[in-house]
Image 1 (cartoon, one colour):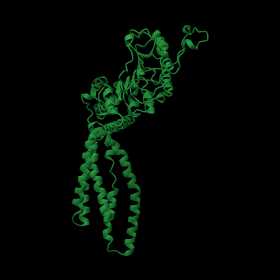
Image 2 (cartoon, rainbow, N blue to C red; image 1 turned 180 degrees about the horizontal axis):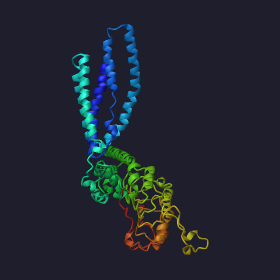
Image 3 (tube, one colour; image 1 turned 90 degrees about the vertical axis):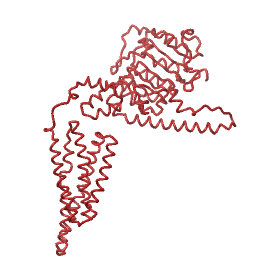
Length: 493
């Protein structure tokens, strides 16, 4: 039994050498990388020593009881020592080689390696343990190990760092700027594959300025494009029955409608889990690496987005100019302490359509991110406009919002608009404003916004039809939410 066990151990070691480690070192060599642990993994002969000791036991079969007892004690001691060192050695191997394999081989390659190893194990068992004496088993194994060991030693010597061809390829001579101009045309998965080629490519791939636009919702659903999702199509898939159903109390179609709603609910749960898992997978690693380069971030329709996830994302992407959170379920908590962390201070485009859980608290927290300035309401003599504006020492003053859409944010009031746009109105930067469905926003605050926004033309102003004496009554656009199933409309309240 002992001989069979140690033969099995050693055969496993050799199979691992030639079907896993050799392929790994070839892959590393193709990338001009050297890892000494790959070559030095199975250099010790502890297994062979144990095999020889066990085999030597056959010669003690006909000796005296005292001699056999002495050998048994020696064998027991060696076995205990082997067990104490061999198991940690196997655990150490797993910690070292499993990450290397996953970094350098794709799923299909790893699957093929696994199948090869299993098949080779079956072959070894058939050749070494099916027929013949124990002695022939051991001799066959020693011979195979000797031959394979010599071959492996030669192969390892072939890839020592001093002997690697130092002549760089043409691609390696390309400057980072040229590589970046090539990689910019690739999809995120293709970029990820290129990052595995060599360390230099990896550094270029994960340069923040290579990732100015990130579309998390699209990517979570496997659409690796640089554009946002079709919100209308997405929301119809999640919330609508597959076909229109009209029903009344007592109508036979009630059951069908209920079934369709269950289907929609399952789809929503599926999407939420998919999106939330994807976000967790890129936090903080991927976004922590490239976050400072992101200028445009789209999370539109991301139903799996949580407040804490969004807060972490905005903390990592402090140079954002464009943020789309349309039709998400985020609330005020997503922006808690964001000002202290430096998030959202450079926003120029903010889209919050359909975020009906947001209140003035959330908008106030966002407004604080643009930094505080001395305004007319904060001066005792009422003449603050002549005073020098004071900035928070830890933050840069924002240029203010250019585009703001709060369509369907029904809980927002004048206070939320005022606190969000404080710096924006001071800068006079606003050019687009949509507050359709914001039934608690008055004509007074709208007139104030227009007064301090000389670049906001009436054709880019949208507000509720029920607002009386609002600015540009004859020229501005009315509510954009009439007939929309997914945004609040004050005409239907």
